[in-house]
Amino acid sequence: MSQQFKLTRRAALAGAAGLGLAATACSREEPSFAPRPPADGPFKHGVASGDPDQSSIMLWTAITAEALDAPVRVEVAEDDAFSSILLEAEAAPAAATVNGMTPFKLLADGLQPGRDYWYRFHFGDATSETGRTRTLPEAGVDRFTIAAFSCSNYPAGFFNAYRAAADRGDIDLVVHLGDYLYEYGRGGYAMEDDERLGRVVEPAHEIVTYEDYVTRYAQYGADPDLKALKAAAPWLTIWDDHETANNAHLTGAENHDPEEGEGAWSDRVDAALRAYYGWLPVREPQDRRARYGALEIGDLATLIFLESRLLARSDEMTLDDFPVPLDSDPEDPLVQETVRNWLQARVGGEDRTLLGAEQFDFVIRTLEQSVAAGKPWRIFANQVLMGSATAPDYTKEPPLWLRWGMRLAGGQIWDFARQTQFGVPMTLDTWDGFPAERERLFSAAREANADFIVLTGDSHNFWTVDLKTEGGERVGVEFGVTSVTSPSDYEFVNAPSVDFGQMTLKANPHILHHSVYAKGFVLLTLTPDEAVADFVSVSTIKDTAFEAGLDSRWRVTPALGGPVAEVERLG
Image (cartoon, rainbow, N blue to C red; front, side):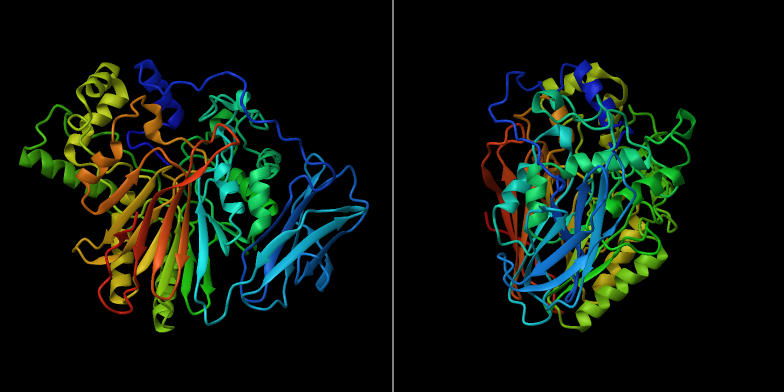
């Protein structure tokens, strides 16, 4: 995610702190939780399954050992007691060994659709924990439950959202929408409590090389709450930017600098993707960057997952070089026209793309095929906010004391606040930076009668957005998934009584919900007649003792070729 005023999150925090606006540090007293002992034996990183279809699924583990002096074997059974074993095979190394850690994968095939299976690995005399997985259904699907996550930052807090989902036992598919890990080094973004929580990143520096990325994946993968959810259900993962570097695009990233010894961008991408495909239960395409596709959930839904960073994404755009003086009259028609024309020239070009032509064509074909097959639902697994989001006027909407604080801060913070007088987007790192491509997608979907639901990560907030073409035709709804642990941008301002979400709604009538502080996940339950989205929140990420609650609940019905229904709030 990118700040709309070209500030990294680290810079934003520093600026706010200088104003007296930074979030107060949590207590440095000893935490109330008991330390969790590290796993013993070679299976320190647990087991996982992913990328299911109707007859196969990828199984994964990692071995920590001084020597790979025995084969790594897999068993797949119809029951958790392994009394009916269907498959026994030898797994193959999935990537190079780093610090004695080697990931292994096996594609288990010949399975039946819509069935639960249990699996485990053996290495020498050691046996892994048991994982539960499930193939996708083929027909007659009356219910399917997806748990969607994003933005899991290890040093920011405990992965209680993962634990809450793992404890449910009713999830058919876990979808991670990106920022599964973060690349920053010690002292970087969201690390204020890392030492107190016992969650200091490894390695201590920003990760750049293959060995760096593997070390970070291994640290995340040993987390007990993540391990629990990996073992509980099959996963589908897509990356956003932090799996490589902040605000990544085709030719670079905000925090990648070859002149600072970080090497060529292509080399860093190669290192990051080798680690990604080695340390997650995913199938590997010929072009590693091309991680997009579709899962067919029987006759119920088509789930389209996107790649919007490394394959084709146009260069990052910001609100730098603003076209009018910031003390201009925002009501002046000439000023308004100047800003509109500048934004159009900056981000409105038909050639600006998130997806690239080949992926875009695939998406449209898949939407059309899903409608032709009579499926009631089309779901997008999408990285960044798809709906438009105009920034509130931060020179008027916040309380007077906060406006004065921003004014006293000056610099980029006050500059951005003044830019919001002119109706600019909240950020250009989302689909708002690619409006022509978004409109082509919406128009093509409308023409195909392909209504859809979008699950989106990145923002660290919960959102419900009514998606419409520029002409006002409704095409679907977007459910923005908050973070597992990463802080909201609004947490960097010590103003818990200020309702920033309500400001967003006031500036954007098509945005129905914006919850800026919650941590958690979205539980999407699909039936032929309705889709219900539960925005599940956790009470804290600073302690392993927590409660799961409900931020809000939303319901939508399928269009089935007719008008696209407006989403309904249930609670």
